Length: 544
Image (tube, rainbow, N blue to C red; front, top):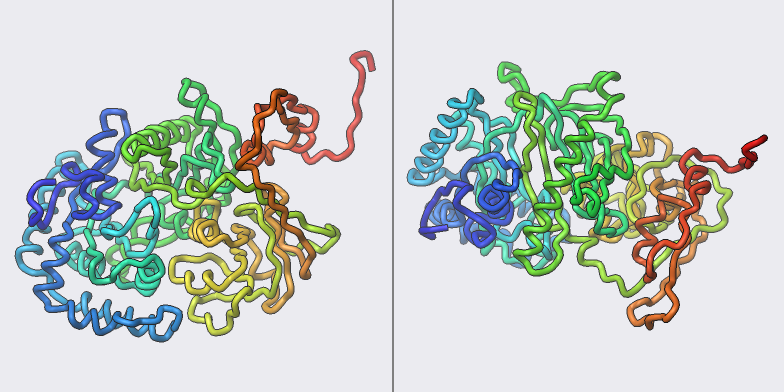
């Protein structure tokens, strides 16, 4: 990266070797700008403050002893103590001044970026993102632990957002997550990434994975999209559109969209009117029925993004020397129509799961009342007492093993999720916060039910079933189920080729993990019957 004492550096001058200086998120952005731009992958330009800048900020304000006093010996399972420590630490950083050399360096870099944007006819609005030096690592994602501020305009607003980013290193969730993963609070530094805003408020944005997030099937890209800025998709505030795209034939030049699912996309995050007086830079608005009823991306745009996901995955795998499925955020600019990658980090759940044991859940009996349904996350089953909770501050009502029922989750909910055996949300898709954390923690999760909080009673005995395909079902009562495990690590090779018969597309990715030599028979009539929901049908002869 150059001089280790630099306070600000252009993103185009950093790469994956710069994680210690600019954190995982900013290092990844710089890597893509440098290495993948020639392959057509577009990343918005900008600059980053360095770890040296953060340490200068801490030292200039004499904050280290006070932070140590707040955090040493902290029990993060004691919610009241965690909240007090987090509030105290954020107050220390939020009330401190940026040292003049750092403030001047940030302003100078912003002026250069604003001038370049003005030359292209683009307003000087930027996204201000936190990038911790222990973030976006293959073994610990730290996703959502620090804050991002969108649509920041002007030098005063930018410097204020930078102070808030520094303070967000000590959100309650970030403190708990670092302690859980063994990171020293005072040794982790924070870099601030400042990028030009992509006008996805006028178009769409979303998340994609270069792996199927439910089964670990590595030959598919899962892409989600909704209107407006991407926070709604990440936070699970909307049920997005979804595509599954087959990578091997995509890279051969075909258009292999395996499935396309229309989401409700009820909200759109857009720029707020600065004259509104509430100090908010963005706001949500309702999406019209016409817009909600059509896809937020064309198939061609979805295929372009999927190709970029393959390029990114291949590059990161070559850098690490092992296959590296990726978790990627993207946006479409409504002014230019261009697509951009906003973030890319290694996927940290399915890609690390061993394949030596096949585990399957079986629910029985199956005549219980269905209360609601949504997107199944994983393939497990959980039963217990439902707790319908609207705010994470209600953690005192939540006991170990309860099932969380709420509208949606964000990182503030993680202390409750660590106690839960499952989660049901009204909103969100397969790439929302609740889905990602459920996979990471091994929870049964059903997201995007639309009406779970209204149909499930607080204290009800319920069963969550994700073992019946893409749709997850919430049943009334504690239903019996069993779990079967089959070790497959040391199976001997057979002289006879072992081929599978398939008839249900929803099971295809799971079946791909079974040791075999391929598909022997694809029952097209069963595939059609499954797709249209037909349970009784006849065959007619050509003459009949």
